[in-house]
Image 1 (cartoon, rainbow, N blue to C red):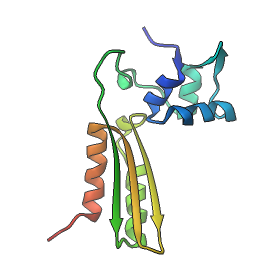
Image 2: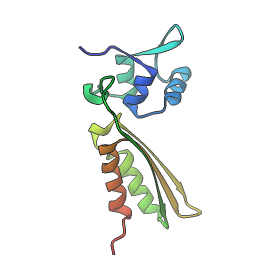
Image 3: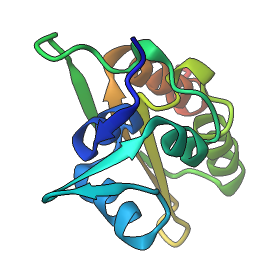
Image 4: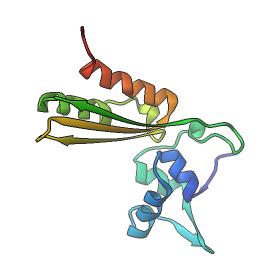
Length: 142
């Protein structure tokens, strides 16, 4: 049976976001939700509209299933703008479609210090794949 309504916690898990971020999206009207008592419920159709595509059924493990997640911060020093652009595109656009909703990536570049920080939060396999991408463009070749 396909789940038709999701709690804010479940939406956060599905999208790889913090619960507070999802609540902010609801308050701002970016994500449609219905308030039931003190809690919000998000319809599946509204969530699919928000994400721009159908939800994968296996994206959220059943309650009680062990779930491992990685929170990773990678700092790259002495990085040029071209590498930053390639890496940003690779991580945010080219990432595997099956990872959508299971991993969240943020890239921050400080051009004055030639420093790049990449923050990855998601399941272990998706995080490992993205770390491989980072290594392929910035890894030591000696």
